[in-house]
Length: 169
Image 1 (cartoon, rainbow, N blue to C red):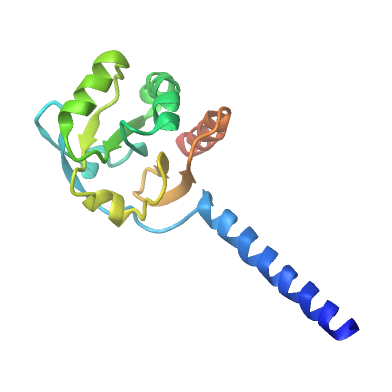
Image 2: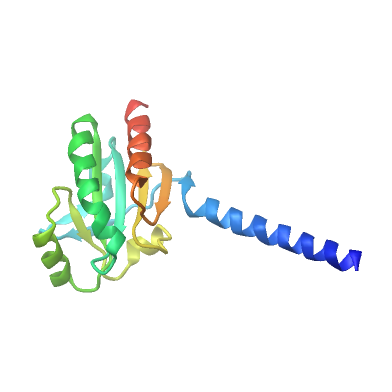
């Protein structure tokens, strides 16, 4: 009886470690070069990540059907306006297949940061996006420094802490 109880406890401990490591990998510090991309902006012009070299960049992947995405968009827009003069930019990357829904949503909830369209999900795949919204913060050298998946009220405080830190570097 004792042996089977010990085995069960070990298995539970291993499962807890796997779950904890998966949760840690879901959001947090990251390193490595940010994959380059060029996408069509909602305005109809091409836009590339390379345009923002030398700036701290937050790439926010979102979709019109995502409630948390819509909830965080006004907060992201406030951050964009606040930190833009300090060398920060925010790029919204929409993953919807069709742009009319994107235009309709942004007509109701306008933002001032650029919105790019990724209907084939090429860029979201390159960034391993598996949850909406997902945000990646890139330093001035083009290195990924922080990844955050999902959104809960208050997450914007963590974003701002990371942005301020990278702007100071």
